[in-house]
Image (cartoon, rainbow, N blue to C red; front, side, top):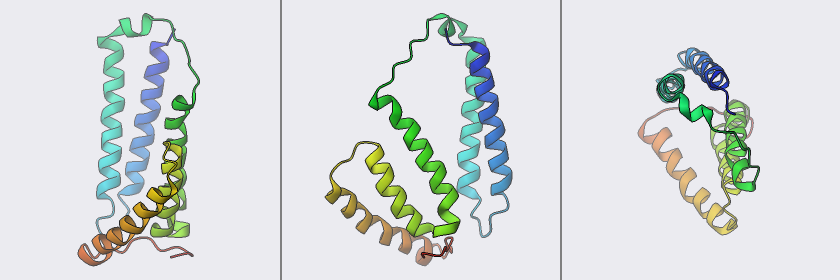
Amino acid sequence: MVSIWGERIAALLGAAFALYMMSLAWGFPAGGHLFPVFACGAMLVVSVLMIVRTFISPEVFQRPFEPRISAEAVIPIVATIATVLYILIIFHLGYYTSTLIYLVVFSLAVGVRNIRSIVLTALVALPLMYVFFEVFLQARMPKGWLI
């Protein structure tokens, strides 16, 4: 069975992680903290809702837990790992280089196998992101040793 306490502990860990990341994001320059703080706030809300759910609907946790491992079950794990690695390398490789790598890895992780589509998406998205962030918003994105 899925443990109510397991759900609560996971939610508390998620909330603690969100608060920690939010505290780090406040130090970002030039309004760069807005999106990370928003994302961490959303994660905090979901964590609180998870805890509330354990009190409101305890019957959900009475059903037996049957883990099913399949390729589709691994996709969220791979996507999460790719996203965490993307965030970690963004300041080392640079925003645009790491975004290109992330786009390719994430596309492959979620099952896109058409390389032409991935390349076309990168060729369209990256210049648009550059124009939007650097020209329109005049936000200097993190530069790394690759750009």
